[in-house]
Amino acid sequence: MPRKLRPLSGLDAAFLYLEAAGTPMHVGSVMLLQVPQRRRAGFHERLKRHIRERLPRAAVLRRVLVEARFDLDHPAWREIATVDLDLHTQTALLRLRGDVQQAWVPPQPLR
Image (cartoon, rainbow, N blue to C red; front, side):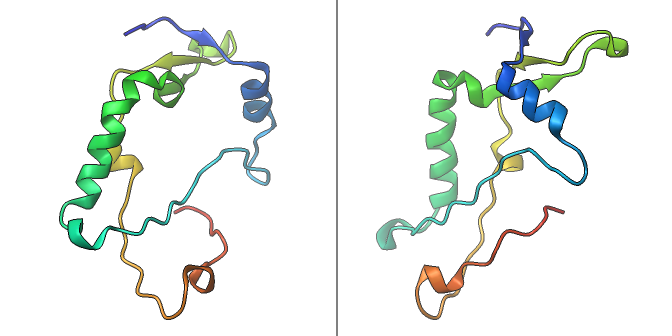
């Protein structure tokens, strides 16, 4: 696995340098998945295993931002070997009355 630092693309740098408390530029997502009725048990673990098996082929998903020492250079990307999927994924059960569209809640700030 390469440990070499890679410079940020122009777009990545723009997002980084334009970000401020009042203008967050980071990106997140929420996925609503319908769990198969016959395979409910262990679905979250199977999904994480599925993602983990594919991460070696998705370098962009294994990058972390590294600040330059003493702020003497621009930040750079470092590719990491493993991603903590327990940190980056959650499961929650939604009890719906109606359909998913009716259950949608506008995004809220992360805690």
